[in-house]
Length: 210
Length: 210
Image (cartoon, rainbow over all chains, first blue to last red; front, side, top):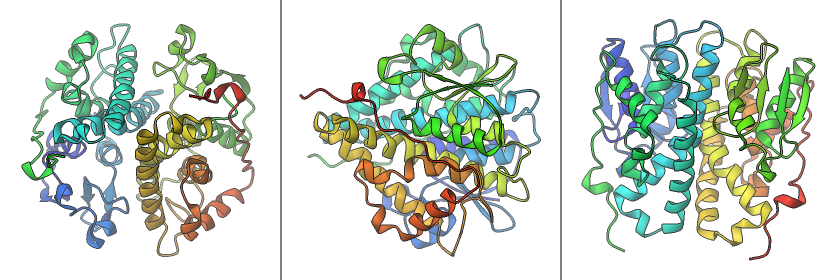
């Protein structure tokens, strides 16, 4: 399989980690979203939304959306348990991640790290406030001694949430307030094959002074 | 089953439509998000994220996240086909919906309809711009004569996307530019049991003059 990828994307890191955990060999093709390479006719044919990651199967079919890639790869493995309501719990947390963590906190992080928060302070404040509220929701979800999000063990739901929660402080949020989240992050990082290989934004992604 | 619901929520409408299409009787309990009723200890116990819809099963277990509710209810029915990559295509579009339509366009719509766009014009402009870009992505996804999003027939992916795309003009977006989307919306509305029962925002949800 081919992973269309960028090393500074947390969404892409999700796919890299699961491919490693499943010991699936893959070809890695970098598509530089910060240079507009995800928004070309060639890449739109892989993903009409013009984003990475995209996983291309041996059949030539392309799968977009990081969490859809995780669910596809994890089907039938220990990383996607199906007993009782567990699959539904995985879905719940993964939709929460795309709606409340990725859209708010990850975008706030990009604005903050790239310097664009100074160009659009109200936008940054809105994303950070809503992203911080999402962290409070995640904290509540980890109450009652819950070790992992969707069931008794680690699943792709934990992997999906890890991507942009572990670096929430980069967005300007305060993980220090969330002891339960920090404990859960450590348990996720301790999983076999789990390697956080997220790279910093490249220099050309940084905002020029306004 | 019990649906914790609000008549002006597109996310809640998704569940109402599928329950009707599946001919599943349910009890409807209104939780007024505009009066803070979703953010009480009682409702946080149902959904740590403090939102509606929540579906409570006869076992007493509660399912949050509108798209997770759709996938749970549709499992094993015609509304969630599983041949080939179809389930993965459903997942792709449903994650896209939560990340790019709900988080951007639905929030822009709320700001616009409630009058809060005048209090935070930069925030509104950001959400509308990104939501309009998501509509362009959906339009590309409907190219090549595609009738429905995830396969040859209607699925919960179409239902999920319909919720906040059909009312994109309320957000200030321009569906008039997207002939393919308008054709697809008509095909979705023509499905048996499909009733758009989305109600306007209640008066107490409207912003007071700034």
